[in-house]
Image (cartoon, rainbow, N blue to C red; front, top):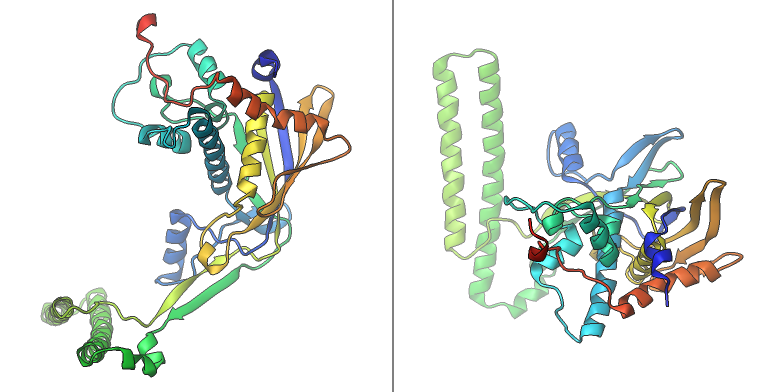
Length: 383
C-alpha cells in the first residue's frame, strides 16, 4: 500500500537529464517554419525543412519539445485508459469530450466556467495525475490548470546538415507497358487521352506564368493602358482555357493532376544523431513521477516521433538520469532507458527507489481513488 501522504502531499521537484538518439532520420516541421522557408525560396515545392536553433556551440538541428510532450501525454492517456478498461470491464470508458480533455487538455468553448476554489484544484490534481502533470486549457469548472511538467527541445549535440529525402511519383503503366495487357481498350484510350490533356495543361500553365510576368513588368514600367489591357485580356483568356480543360477532364472521368510528378521531399535530422533533452517535474510528488516513468515506458513500446514513418523515419531510443532536487543539490535516483519496442530499463548503483516509485501507478489505479472525467460543478456546495 502506498502512503498517500508521501505520494500526494510531499512536494518535490524531479529532473530528468538525458538524450534521445535518432535510430532513423527524424522529420518534423511547423506550419510557420514551412511558410517562412517557402517565402525565402520564393516558390513551391521545396524540401520541407527541419528546425534548427543557435546555441553557444553554433547552429544545431533539433526536434521540438511540443512533439515530445504530445507523445508522452498520449502515452500516459493510453496507459490510464488501458487500466480503466481492465478495472471497469468497459471497452469504451471515456466519451469524446473526455478523450479530448485527456489528450489535448480540452477544447475551450464560448461559455463561462464556474468559479472554483484552490481546494478544488488540489483535489483534481490528486484524483487525476495526468491533469496535474500536463495541465489543461479547459478543465471543466476548473478552467485553466497549469501543468507541472516542463519538456525541453531535443537538440543535436553535434553540428550536421539535414538529410534530404526526395523522389518522384511515376505512372506505372508508362513505366511498365506490359501492364496494358490487364486494361481494356477503353481504359487504354482514356489513359492516353488523359496523358495528352495533362501535357497540354502543363504547357498552358507555363504560358499563363509567362503572360502574368509580362503583365507585372508592364505595370512596373508604366506601359500604356492599351498594352496593359491587352496582356490582361490574354491572361484571362488563358485562364478560361485552362478552366475549361479541367472541367472537361473531370467530365471524362480523368484526373486534373498528372500521375507522374516530382515530389517536394523533406529534410530530416540524420540517423544516428544524439540529442540532449531535459524534463523537469516541478512542485510534484512521487506518484506523478511514477505516471511519467510509466508513460516513458509506454512510449518505448512505440517510440515514433515526427513525420514520414512510412518512409522509414521517426524511430528513437532514449535515456535519462533522474534526480531529486534538494537543498544540498541534485540527489541521484537512477537512470531510466528505453530501446525501441522493449520495456523500460532502470539502471544505476541502486535501482530500488525508482522501481518502488514506478509501482505507485499500479497501486494508485488499484485503490480506485481516481477520476479522469472532466471536473463538474458540485451543486451541493453552491455557486
